[in-house]
Image (tube, rainbow, N blue to C red; front, side, top):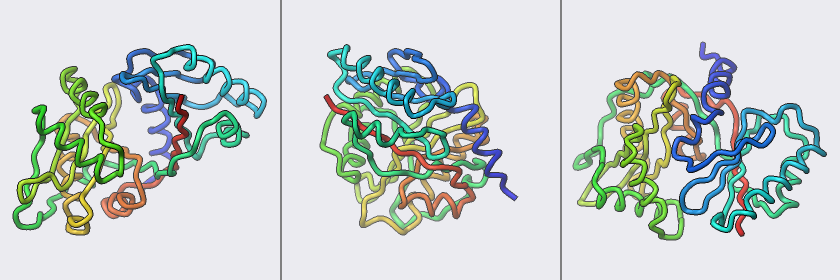
Length: 262
């Protein structure tokens, strides 16, 4: 029997640390919070827990976080990452009162990599490969932007190219058919942990339901095992969650990002 409590404890203990933000430009500790700055003017707030903070303390922390980021003219947006299992009285209301907006809630999925690393038949004419060259990276990110309905921008592609140049273990995988990328996703082995994350999964609508995303996930899981990672984690939409559940991953909690823009 899969022990979801054990998986959630591993997630909290191993991932809610500096391991969560390997490409950070800077990290400032503020009480229980980690205030992270990424390239491109992006702030990010995360933490292991809120150290038993009550509603009044949380109101103070949110105000202090905004003051911290407002003081940096380079910061144009901030994400506060919440988890559904945290004790955080009044956090939702306080974030909204301070100009944050809630994005869609996603499922935190955790499980053993070996459960995903299975042979999945691909539709005829579909192939998988890992990409490392700039034109491929830009094409992959453009496809993801299109699928997610994100405004076209060079920011994410530039960030991914910086990550590849760092050689921190991140991998980018695509499925191709008829001369175009039809599905894509990243693998991010987390240094010093048993985990590798699978992120950015996107499949063009007309290619969904044909096993391509599952095959892409299996390829990433095999690579994770090759790199000594035994656990997989993912923040999953309601499209990808059932696929991962069928492969043996478990929903251990939820996560909701709250966004602030200058």
